Image (tube, rainbow, N blue to C red):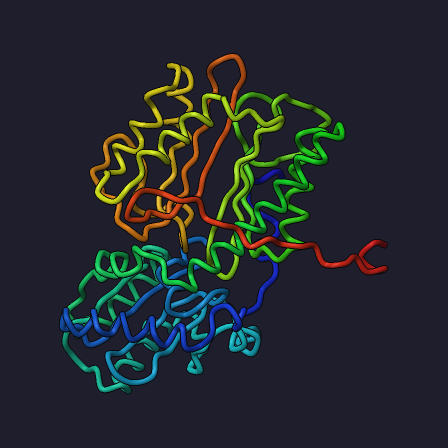
Length: 380
């Protein structure tokens, strides 16, 4: 069966304690609990899965999905989506000691945890519950009937709007992985390989340097950008590829336009967006700067594929860069910008990862990634 469902859902799976140590999560919990106290919340319940996990990852750490309970005081707990056979492994991936799998009894387990922490009534904040299927969602809501439920999502995302120093470090590592993969694809394409072969090489390298997840779009068999579906000997000039890599929960991405064309429509549009990015500017103004110099056909493709937005635990987080957005940029934000321009003499693709500073934007500096040595078994 041909499907766009990824066959490799997770790459290198471990907790990088040197980068995101336990004290980093202690500080995140402290900040969230301060916001909970301001809002009079007795506890917080957060859900996440492997497709939508940014609300969960910030507090729990990467690789563990499920339903997380954080009381205003006392030890937190998480009830994982993974079966009980994986619990021993999952305990090595998070700082949370109270970890278990309850399956269909998760709702009851959440309620019991709250009672055991002395939370028998009052207001409970929730976030990420949209990832739950109908039955688990209804079961959880039924078990929380004794509490007043408040959506904590807006406050929680505002608190995460500016990346912390270690988050920025993780993002820079992820960008180094995307760079390594992009260079490998460009090199293979320049040697005469097909677009599909170059895409395969990009993912191979990204996985080998340690990316947990890899997403790629490319002009494999025509003008539009699509995910890989099958092998092909077709070469399309220029070779366009958008590759996103994730490390310890944090996304980064890189655009490939080979051969390079710094004067392409897409490159000029991205440069205009970067120049317009500054504290106080709106996302709509950034989008308008990118659109201004594009031909009509390129405007259509740029709007169809989007201009990007905030990047971190989510690949396209707020503020989304679109013409109708009035969301403002603030100092410390990290943005991922991209433009696919299908019009003009040649299609083009460009992107940039930037941090907003007091006087404008500066590019994110990647941490270079290197391939591990190939063993005899791996070569075989």
